[in-house]
Length: 106
Ligand code: HEC
Image 1 (spheres, protein in one colour):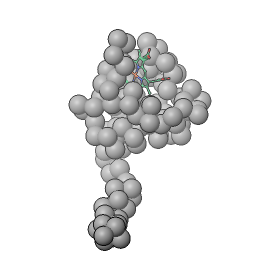
Image 2 (cartoon, rainbow, N blue to C red; image 1 turned 30 degrees about the horizontal axis):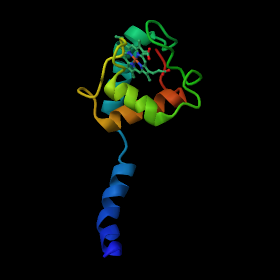
Image 3 (cartoon, rainbow, N blue to C red; image 1 turned 90 degrees about the vertical axis):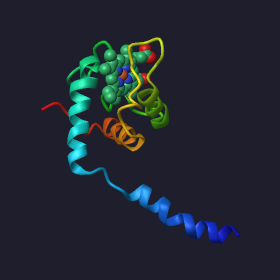
């Protein structure tokens, strides 16, 4: 029974892991990060009302915790939940870019 399930589910798992973020969406997410997130975290992401989101500031931080912070916000603080506006894979993509220091203000 188990091997059959595995064979059935494997393609689904592979597809989910392999699907890259479409380029147009990447550009929109980058813009959102610099404009909307930047309004609080600083246009250069070095901090403002919210803490810095640079690769250095996020070094060694658990990606899952960062994901949950962005999806659900931090109740009682100014950090709003982005779950209503962004897909989970888009939030994970943002966390990955932030931790790699891949997004810079132009
Ligand atoms: C209205 C202001 C505001 C906006 C807009 C905002 N944030 Fe925040 N964010 C905060 C504040 C304030 C905190 C710190 C909360 C706390 O005290 O724990 C925070 C915390 C965070 C943290 C946790 C940082 C850490 O060191 O633990 C991450 C990651 C984060 N924000 C990402 C984002 C992203 C990505 C966006 C845009 C999609 C965004 N924020 C938009 C105010 C904001």
